[in-house]
Length: 517
Image (cartoon, rainbow, N blue to C red; front, side, top):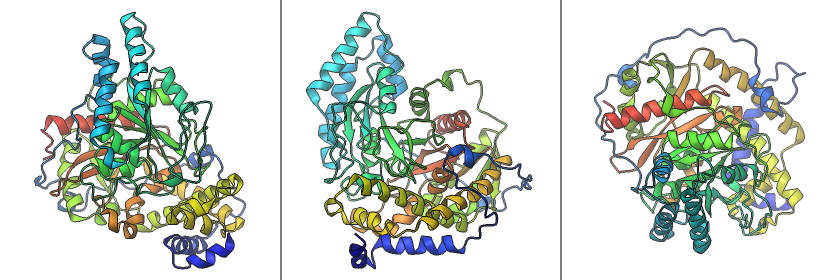
């Protein structure tokens, strides 16, 4: 396959690896005895950082804190189906049945098949399962918090009796058992409705075979593109996806739904087609942050928060706005995000400008993450004997180019990852939550997306590399009626705070009629 590399000298993948290696080689290893961090616990442990000086926002007009809201928010979902939490309550009250939820999901699928979200759905089996759930409920048998709720699963995650193809002609597995994440959903009563589309092998942020539900001429984002489309259109009330660099949050932002990446290791990753063993995450895509919390309580193996019991809207929270990420946002995206910033003041939060993180940090995270994740992906596919000739050119080029990465460069990328983590995690000694655009632009056209690949993912990559919990929350539509996502990030292991802040933000947005000013 090295000979193939000579034929792709100018490919996007080849150029990206050259740039990444140039950045890596410019970094100094100040502690040569430092071992590579092959576990999250190695990343999250750090020396006590010196407390940075907290400063108020330098330019209120720039961040929008004092700006009149000029962008009206409309709920971005294309469906009137209930949220997961609403459906769970209605089922127990007898106001809706699992069969009705499944029929609504099947109807939504038929109406939106041209978007390409679903890759496998057995209508008759789904109806039989729903009827069984309803029969149990009528007998007083409650199988768990997700009893009878239809959910979908990204096609890199194993579901027993359903194919795992990972969006590729080069892969077709017939698993006999569920991945642990899927098994936990079933144990909680979830009805596994369908497998949904992914960017091939989860190696991209576009899912090019799919179309955006807000504008079919635009991409859905990826790699969990099918999951985001499904939830946006009402094909199931939640979806299980993966995230290695940006794959839950980017498609969620572009399709107007919630993508929640928990702490690295929060959800077991066995039973997935691996992209990167040391970076892969599993998490939910849902309609609301509250719905995501229900999914996470199940996926994490134990409840961690009771949303219904929250007492107030968290007045004592320091929010750090990452300035350089706002500077890079397109004007229409920045307008939407700035229009909702006053919500933080209404919640009593203290808002600060984070000027200690720069574009250089995002470039470094991208370079390290690219070298690490693609080296590990190439290793898997070489041992799997994946026929790269059957892969789409973009994926084939990435896997081929990664074969030329030296072991020393891979190990140095891992070691620099540790140093990067220590530096960035020290921000959470000052700020409770970091805020930035999930994606600094709206979904680009399907026929012109390649030049935007790095911009689409760059704001999400650092938090996967380090393992922080991060969530993309819909915050409005541009004047083109395209959705915008706001990303919230907290320290590792702090999912509860992330859920509470996300729910409070959503509640304020709704109470203001979707108008942040």
